[in-house]
Length: 244
Image 1: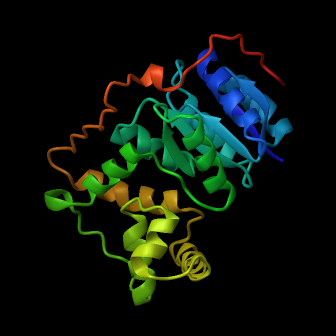
Image 2: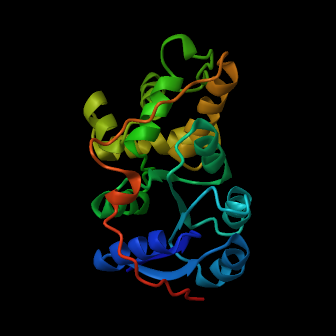
């Protein structure tokens, strides 16, 4: 069973995540931490397969802690889980080592799908973040960021889909290729671009677009009709126990 740890200062969010993870039957929550300092001490011992973290913790050290942990836990996947979907937070989280980004409006099923995607080598993105990336790479905001000349035509097509925030199944459908063929192209892309994930690719091209925008991008995240962020979870106000 895949192991998951949590870094979040909100006990209600931690409770929601723990319930969803343990109820999945495929994942087990082995630890939860309220602050980066305790997470840095505990996670090196826990060595979970996935860490779900809030990038913007109260003491403003969340991003730096993830960067520190990622450098010491190369085999662990890091999933940002946050209410903040502005361009700066997205880019900082991905640059620190996040291989997925999910907004806290997501429900339990979306969370588990994101964990499944991470476990199979994917980089799950919430719809809001995917839209942000699409807007960064469209219209007047398109930056002149050339693809490496060493890429083949098909590799360039795969890269173009990745920087649009497409999911793996969407890429195979759009390009008319199998999952195995896509995996082969992506391995070659990672080697040529010297990256380890789709999120790292997007961080590189996304940051170039952000620097090119004048004035800066104004992102308007889509609202969920009749649903406030806090009500999307059906959170239970149960006490959260920290496991170390």
